[in-house]
Image (cartoon, rainbow over all chains, first blue to last red; front, top):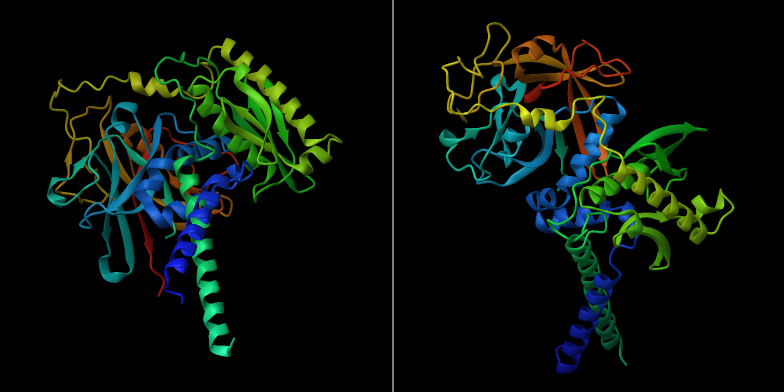
Length: 157
Length: 302
């Protein structure tokens, strides 16, 4: 009975309607204040790189506002880019706000992360602003001088 | 209808309901991503005049233990947000408004584009069709106003502030403008064999990244690295170590990296690193400008 044609149509119609209603109602204007839900959804569906692209500007401004409240604003350009772990084919594992001279910041498209665990006691992470997101060959990493990381943005997956 | 049949019907209905819920959620999530309310879509690419005025910012005040936020734009304070909504304090809401306002101004938002309007049963203030703030009931109640009245007042205040901001040139004072950095000549061709931006000085620095080819860019002063402690802002507890990098004279001044922790939309945790000239962060952070973090480390406690 469940597999008959009528059921299939009903299922299709219900799903389509629910989808359209969901899309139509979307986040109400109040949720403009709680984009957390959207952020969470986007993160789960599309991943960190997409979220950084969509929300990077907002996150960047948010961090700068927090810094301004502590009179510690960065005197230089800032932007948010994904952190990619070397050797994992450009998969973003987090995000970072970078800072530096505008000409240099413009060149950065990701921060490469190199992990180093000497003696299993210390865990160090090198964070290197790079021009290319896809780091397949660690010997060809192009570091961007003058740019440093000013915030580590942890994206829970 | 026998029992088996009933179970079958119930299972089918539950499955359908679950599918419908998933579809609804998927649709809502897609809309949020495709047309995020907060991100600015102030059309008109290219042609809008460059905004010459000051940036908006939020001021925090705490009254009876409650965080409130004032939106400041130039000499005007168009909004004071006193109540929490959507899990955000008044101050955090003010920061969201500031962010949208600044994005809007940058995209050419004009005073006459700011309106109070009803949307999805809510009273909102929009700028060029994008939501700037939603007027919640509590906010209206404490002023003995209706939500639409408050939306009108806020919209009018914002129009005045935005109008004035467009007439006001950006302030030169205060912290060095971001463009000042842009002006610094990259001097890309004049490779006058200045030894190494990344040369590790003796002592506490790491020697690593042998494979990294640093792009041609010549700073005014050689860069160097240094290892300093990461200290939490507030408690002053040591959280680990950081490698900082920047112009020699600036790096010499760095004594520690203050770590501020905050979260964005109650979902994304952010650790902000501020290189400071003191060993322990004070109430005001003495940031050493031009220095960034290029590595962090922590001791594993076993």
